[in-house]
Length: 421
Image (cartoon, one colour):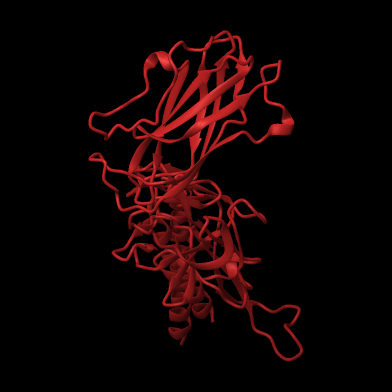
């Protein structure tokens, strides 16, 4: 009977309308992917197959597939809003069960874990103690505690000493002590050049390391004296240059070694930090006929730091920035891909789970193995095309009405048969 065929058509059109209405409803849903209803015709068959003149029995809904095309990327002011440009899914953990999403509107929960709006924890590759990314997957947690201070152990100085300088008429003297009564300090007439930099003790307290350079009576020879917080710590150390204004390679490295330095506070008492050794590297110092200049001072110490901000680069590495100027890698966002993304099972909250049809996940770092790259402070919009959906809506409505018209026609035929006398 044509009634059954037309009813299958109405059911198919209703399913198509449901899919289209769901697409339209999610046109503004971050990370949503357009769904499409797919249909197949129905034939009555026997064990020997369908007859050559068999008439179809209508239509059935064969599948609802999703189109995983790239959505537009919109930019935000939140560093934890992440968009994938290219293939792949974010991996989420819900009490150990894995889910996958393209919606990157993440945040930090009260325990410091990076989570989705539903509270699922974002997965990433962990880092070791020195900040190197490992292959271990786990929850990404933002540590908001203070970054421990690091005492200065090395100072690397690049400078030029003016070869035209002459020996000062006043001896440098010393040792000096800024906390003595009365305090003592170098006479400006006793040295040719000086420079200072900040160094740190084991508690993160800053101190001023000063180097004083004194030209000697011997050609191409200098003395260097070191003071920390105005207290002599070492010296004099001798610097001997070749006639080309550089050190003899056989004498490298050229260093000033400060040993057993006891950090003092502003009152001249110990800060409580342990004594420490500091090596001042002067291997890149030159003696040319140009004024004294310091082109670089690098030291490896820093004070304690409070978390100030978070940045995530295109490879998914999350960097924490601290108030002491340091930055640390916390983790690397992991992405997963599938041989058959259409085999994923949608479970709501714009998430999918792995199925037998999708195959197992292939997890890697962003930008590798065909995976997309990460755009921080951005979100991937829904890939629903409203105009196309409205056109499809008209077509589905027409199909529904046409099948309803078939039922009306069949009803009229049936009534004609019933009224036969």
